[in-house]
Image (cartoon, rainbow over all chains, first blue to last red; front, side, top):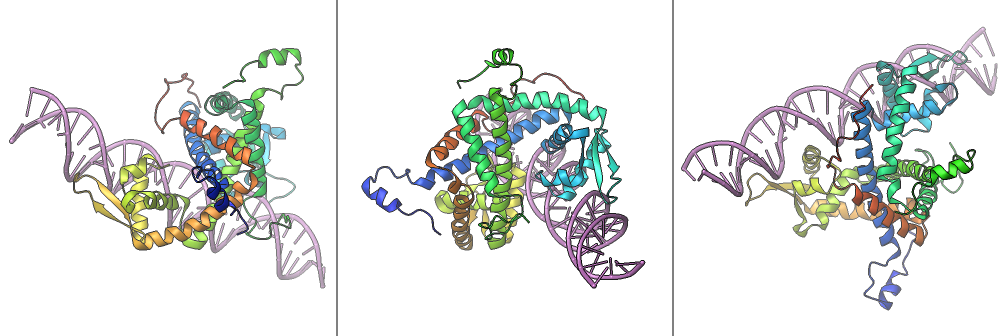
Length: 180
Length: 180
DNA sequence: CGTGAGTAGTTGCGCTGTCAACTACTTGAT
DNA sequence: ATCAAGTAGTTGACAGCGCAACTACTCACG
């Protein structure tokens, strides 16, 4: 509710321009986003997989670890900023550990917790993977945007992202900006 | 595709400002796209799930069927324009059939093939789901974009999408940098 | 007509991720 | 000190999807 509806008027004024409805363009943008996302991730994941045997999710964890102080992060920090639940993180970390790319340490100050720590090999693999991956992002994505579009995409998508908060927050109760 | 490669010069001129690189903004846009996509699909899927027990993929199949002449489509037509392989489609159709939303018919002219056909119930469910879903797309996505941004997003993402073609094509065998 | 290559859809298997229940620990109130 | 409530990570059961092998069919060519 509480959406458009001056549409009728505009159509009446110029019946030829029917695709001009304000949300038609937005719906098209949404579908383009779905397609672009699926093809981009498909392609980038395939590249990463072939060259280093990494999935995008695994790459992302390595990325976050390599950017963290001491190359270490608590599991729940990985969970919070990631597109994954805690059990997903737990299993993904286990897998990467099996490949020797990282190891875990129990946290001394809070004995419930654990750190994931990048190994030397993990750092090396990440560095190589990152070179390839960033090139891929530019090749398949950035290359097709002019500077204005890139900036516009960025601010628009960040706004959309931020409006949805973290994967939680119920319907309603948005207005109050409750964190949870 | 304007922009491009003045980077070297700029870095040379001012080595301190390294984050000013033209692709930094593109990388940020890429990350925003990942986040926005995951939160949007998460939210929209949750809404669809709660109200009609549908996943986004299932919704999309219903959508394509309801837009098709005779509310019917060959399996491979679903596969081609969809973000799914043929086995995925096969199982998804089976599932929806189990819920009575569609049925299948063997194709008389090509006895290998089969049609997925929307049932009356399927059409009803889709209509209701679509009302909710489109509202959700506007609420969580469209609502946050002004007209210029929406148009820009659309053309930019369609360009990116089209540049990647359908999920196939192997542009050379890349560099050989296998490791792990 | 016969045969081999190609296409449509199905299915066994394995991978990855979720959910919910569980253990182990911390923390704040009493 | 005690205990209830909350948090961190693990685990079992399971859903959904892709891959590759399979069946069933079509089609072009000889």
